[in-house]
Image 1 (spheres, rainbow, N blue to C red):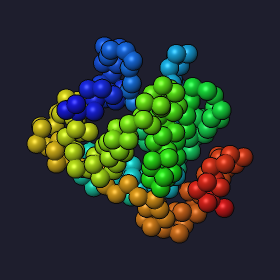
Image 2: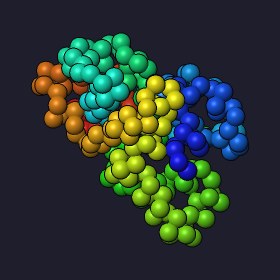
Image 3: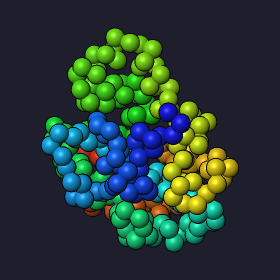
Length: 224
């Protein structure tokens, strides 16, 4: 595989036609909320969610890197709270999937748990994809170790062109520019707490509490 989009295209960048042209079984990725997903009864869906505090900081730097210019941190923060950014408000987006967490064809994966307990979480994903696949991986330790290595943050950061390849086709970037654009910044837990002011953190958490009250997410992220 030379590029991720060859086997798992990003729908918002390449369009639905590229997905339709894939050989079955097909796999693709997108950032759509649950209500925009036209579910197939034969398909399985994996949703990775992250603490909105860290999502804010990560997305801010992602947009700066992609646009190649500095953005106003304060202005973007207000847009993040109001939902006046791409994909709308993060809080409702996460909630839209969490409300369906018990459906058999949907697996919710915590970004934080994926960092802390990589092997355990990866095995959970593998088992969700099918018992025969799960047993095959369990019987081949080298295959499991390769999966763990190739899905690590450090591996992706070292192989930027493999994961940035959509840009050259869709955003007018040259291959050299693609190799220099680094979307893999830190990938750590707690960046929001370190980057936001006390007032910003308070306002962000108030919205999180209002929208996500009654879920297990606030406890999971230690928001109180």
